[in-house]
Image 1 (cartoon, one colour):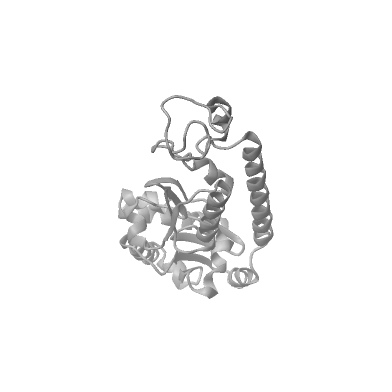
Image 2 (tube, helix red, strand yellow):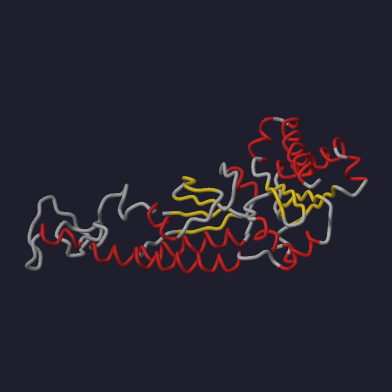
Length: 269
């Protein structure tokens, strides 16, 4: 089994990787698990939102952090697709029997529940789910504590300006589409909001969230991939449809960004 976690290396990507590893540990499964941060490889895999999880060549989730329990439920059963390698009597030998027979004083029918391909006893399964539930609750409590309030740096950044800030967030790895986002956002402001920019009502900030001093933005705005965010004071709007709208052409993308800017400027009056 091979598992890949796609992402830029943000905290959510790391959390998904840790949850995948925890699921494998609880399941007692051997698997190759790989972090993929190269943007070209991410795009080639058809991933539009990170973090994303791939199991045996199939992307099973994107744009969210799966819990260890959710990942465990997605893992293929032991022996699935390759046949069982243990004998029908459950003795643990790797020979295969065409017909059931007794082994070590125990019949095959009785020992079937102990077969390594049988998924384990109900009690073991219950213990596994209880353990994963405990891990999930612990992670949830940690995230709630971390996200209870915006970081002091973020509050200071947005509170000290009366302008509507248009953020474009990116990482160290940038694809052609990511660069296009930035160019089209700049064109939108220049073509449609020249007066607002000149009067200081609107400002643009290009931010690399992979820099340590900018990592707080990931938590502040719930970022999972390259994003355009509009922020006014403590109010913000994540334009999470940019990956969909970009496929509809440059004009459609600019209108989508412009419409959201106009709405937030109007709300600020």
